[in-house]
Length: 61
Image 1 (cartoon, rainbow, N blue to C red):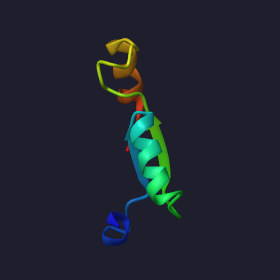
Image 2: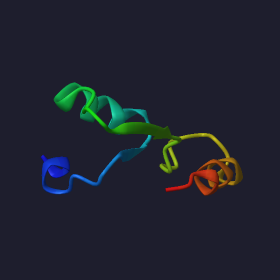
Image 3: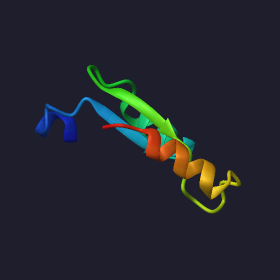
Image 4: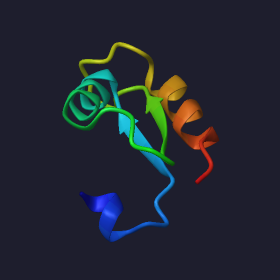
């Protein structure tokens, strides 16, 4: 797994619910990793671009 090769990883940011669901189903909660679920940037997500931009811009690595 990627976090085994890069042990300093302590956060994973998901671009939408589906990516989080897929990852969690496959790997579950990885010890020492905090998950962040962000709104999907896909045009299928009806949230306004401005709101998506505001939420994504507020995230600090």
